[in-house]
Image (cartoon, rainbow, N blue to C red; front, side, top):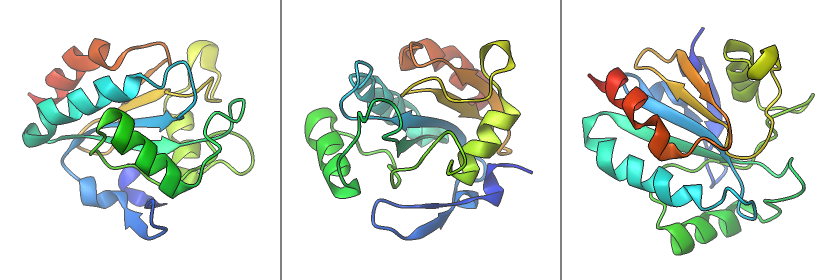
Amino acid sequence: MSIYDFEVKTMDGELRSLSDYKGKVLLIVNTASKCGFTPQFKELQELYQAYKEKGFSVLGFPSNQFMNQDPGTNEEIKTFCEINFGVTFPMFAKVDVNGKEADPLYQFLTKEAPGALGVKAIKWNFTKFLIDQNGKVHERYAPSTKPSEIIKDIEKLLN
């Protein structure tokens, strides 16, 4: 099984197969608009711009599960990201990342790459999963890991 076996909803509510990203290196991130880590959108966009022509993409999944830090609608979140951070990388519909209602993609990601001490649950907004060109989870990064700190790992996978 790989991430290519999953479909996710776009901000517009349409289903999109992650198999559309076959062959790309991906950074999947659960985002929030009102979080202390929200400024990471700027670095995520910079990564996307710098490496998109080399086969890389960032995929953002807003979640409101951590202290209600993304309460807006999908349209409000999309507009916020575009206006405040110039986000052009794909952003998907808001999802749960933990619990019984967790999106199947996140159930898979957390099973494949548990966090510290083997804890599967997402700790906070801006947890990141680096995915290789075969759709396999390469690494999980803590919310405090800045996107710029992942560049070497991204470049290694792209080369």
